[in-house]
Length: 378
Image (cartoon, rainbow, N blue to C red):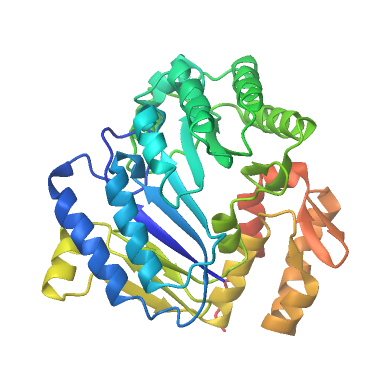
């Protein structure tokens, strides 16, 4: 089964950590929705007869749309693709958008999962990130969603923030647990080039947290959530009762997906396509019939590297048999040679035919993945 990602590029304000494509100019909203529908119709045959397992509204801030606009998009997707009755349909939302009126209307659409960008419950954290809501609004938004009938809710948290103490982080995690949500995504702050936080770091206005404090926050997060009944199934993701993010899990399992909207990516195992990160160029492309995307055909080496980057992130790990069957002995030899030091150091374990990251390995996963990539010319 395949997935569909829909990128809504509008935000009321820009958060200091975010490097996703977005615009605070809503002037092209109507034109964007028209172009988005045109793209969906033009590309409806790309997945053949494959059924859609998940739809994900990301951004940007999808919750700035009207309920009627969300419904119209989903009606079109349903007409163009095969959707099973249990298709997971997720909408990312900002807490301050989740009014009772919006939530009650949304609950009458096919949307059945919410991903709420709480990020923190501490006002000091939220102010430092330039978030629009405060901690009280974050709590109320989750409870309002539950009262409106949503029973599959994910919330986002960010740790590793400048000046974020271990004690303050613990209070955040405790509050998240108390809300009885089904899923929590927790990300360590990354200083992406082009963001305000990156500029602050380079100018000396903020400093990165010491590695040990960041690791202590990660260990605390993992132990508290697991004790509360969450399964740590991917580096940044925790789920109760097997309610994984079906959409993101498909990414990590390298299943096919289509991405609609500016900056959205698509993948079919053999090729990767990405739409231009420009609303103006996206609109002009669809209106005038000009190319508004680029693509690449993935070599076996590319596919191997993709497998490393995606699969090692999860509790299921990298299968030795899959490596041998899909990539051949040269790639398997390279992998086994490069993974050996991490096995010896305890960052990776080998069990039941699969290589998996330990807690210590999860925290330095980027360094491990970089070492495992196949970078030689074939």
